[in-house]
Image 1 (cartoon, rainbow, N blue to C red):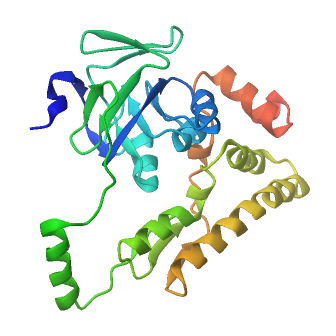
Image 2 (cartoon, rainbow, N blue to C red):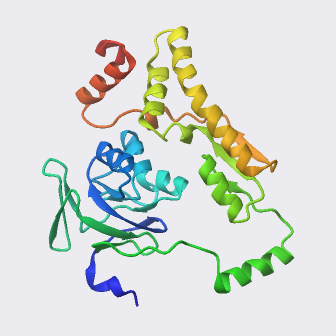
Image 3 (spheres, one colour):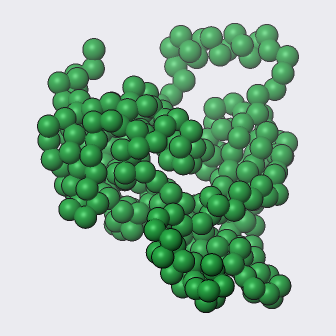
Length: 269
């Protein structure tokens, strides 16, 4: 039995496996600041939306009060291989006070917590992490599989890092690169996509696309390098446009889109 069991504060659906340890932050901006300073953080949200992707990417793990196995947080975190626990019923997040309540405790920005993404457990304090590896019985079993299998195993990968990790684990190609997921990697990319969506002219739309081009070119070069000549299937774009737009009160959404896109509020509406 794990030694930390006495310090488990709560439990939620294990939306993305793995383990993560970090200091609590409540906004994506705080997460990115932690990352820039070399720190490790856990992004805690009532629920996530596209505006949070920069912070989700910067954080070691994600914990949400609401959501499930198919929520925004779960889907994005699994795509990145990032530990995530969603819909933790015992969790109460107060964004204004920058506090969370769970397991009879009140925790604040900077407090340490640990996430077990395999069991969905939220643990008080700073646990020691061990790097994952394929070893023991699983390693033996996989060697038997390699001897007998008649099909190749491909992976889904949307970033050079994902592709490199897949190769280390024996993938023989990429079955699908979901290019729209590349746009969630930073706020800068996300804003460019929103500008493309809201563009009033062909020229404005082209300008937004031109800002995305260097990011995509760099990502594809990294993916092709990691796969070293193995097959890569690319989905050019599957644009569920609502996923790129802000969420929240209508007035706030309109103001944000108008500000980012340089168009009037009336045009946004």
